[in-house]
Image 1 (cartoon, rainbow, N blue to C red):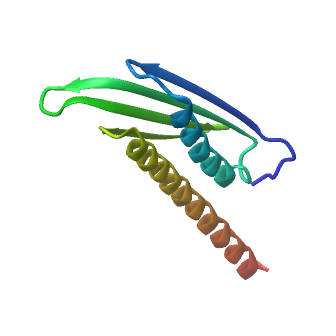
Image 2 (image 1 turned 180 degrees about the horizontal axis):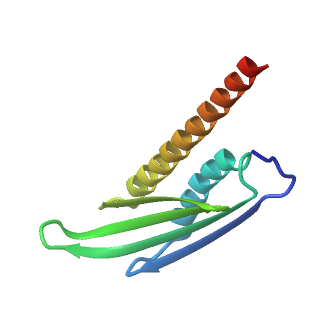
Length: 123
């Protein structure tokens, strides 16, 4: 786990049959910053690939689909959500990404603790 002095953030947003207003963009930026603050300590570079599109579903009619890929150095985290309210979809995607990142962090810390316990018993 290397903490670096510089942090590189790239955001790519693609839309299809959907207009991304400045209000929605600001709301999305707010959620991206929350995720960024979580990964900033472990990774030096992060790429957000976000796709928002309007799709038609045979049962549910017209819906929105949002896919967020988060590329962290050599790792990738993905979340996909469908719904009618864009704000609800953004919140759900953010929650899912943070949940996955926290699980990875807990797994990493557990492995570190296990290694340090093993090293202490060998000494």
